[in-house]
Picture 1 (cartoon, rainbow, N blue to C red):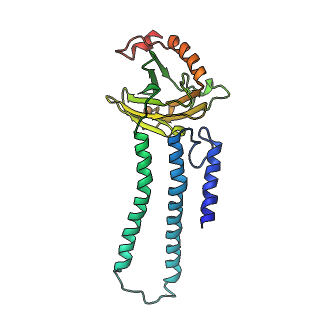
Picture 2 (picture 1 turned 90 degrees about the vertical axis):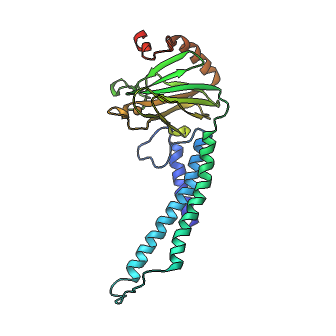
Picture 3 (picture 1 turned 45 degrees about the vertical axis):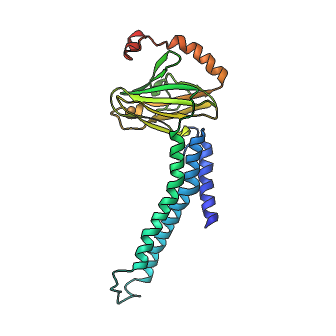
Length: 270
Ligand SMILES: [Cu+2]
């Protein structure tokens, strides 16, 4: 049994290693690029998956056993029994214990995600119908990020995931993300970083991540927000500190924030 579980979970780990963005026929999670996501993947692969498989196999066994053992021809006079105290206590207690076993590591991960370490960089993501706007409040930078249409895609850009202006952050730095929306509910989600938070008009949610590897990471709006919900992707490029400084000096000019009071004015100023 243990061997089968190891084979099945290593299959998922193998698939995971292939992915830096969603892949065709992908099973399991995308490749983790932060400590938080690694916790989630381990929790899923090493605890949830074995429990799910064990319960499924057990229930299947019970059904098959009942079908064969208590079939009409083998059991012409069925039992009239309606209660069995021992069985009833067991099928209440065992699921409770399973839930407790799952809850402890689950809460540990939740609280770890909830505690934001001292941030090196703060960015603000604003959901609009239907694109994301970004702000680097400490750098006087503000820009919009639209999906690249299929006909305009470069060879290295994935369909429905690439954007015109990407979020750029340095590697191995704590990035705090403030998330809000301008019109309806959206959600800023980036699977590789284990990040997903609702973007709610009129309030600011926060989350954080620390990317461990340079690269391009893709996410999508994850709250059904309207007709073009599927077309407001999120692209984060993780670069070295030096490249980040270069990007900053360009972005401070290109995306200089002009009016703090009204985000919409920046559209007119382009
Ligand atoms: Cu949305």
